[in-house]
Image 1: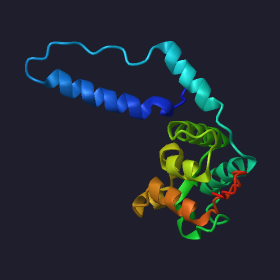
Image 2: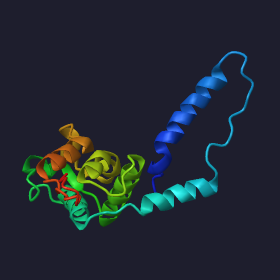
Image 3: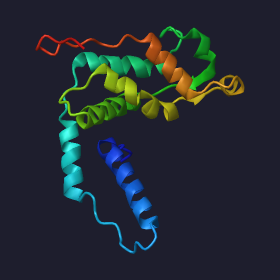
Image 4: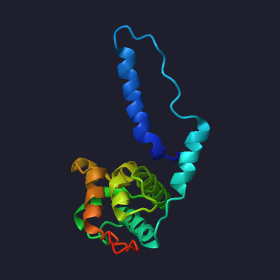
Length: 165
């Protein structure tokens, strides 16, 4: 299972840094304790999986990933020759999953297009296979993702309380 544990990534990174810093302090002989047990981690994963994803946000994720496979149709013809392979349909699944985790971390029960845009570079960069021409021209997967985000309209959602985001 290659699921990114984005729900706790920030907490784990912070705690690891605090632990490493504390252990390195002169005269500190203590060992780090357990931060989260397996049951707590699984509960957080279940809560993140329950975050609502509007069909418009799912369509946005699909469009973003598809754009990495057909840059010309996505309005990024200048980078089309730089890519041999873009993200697969599995990339869409992981993009939505990471968006759910970010919305959960941000304290929301729903995913916004902004959540997907925020996690898109991390989810997509390793799924884009550059062509020889792309490598020779110094094109990076991050540049491709950035251009796809710039040319793809983000969905606007009516939250039902008078706010449209």
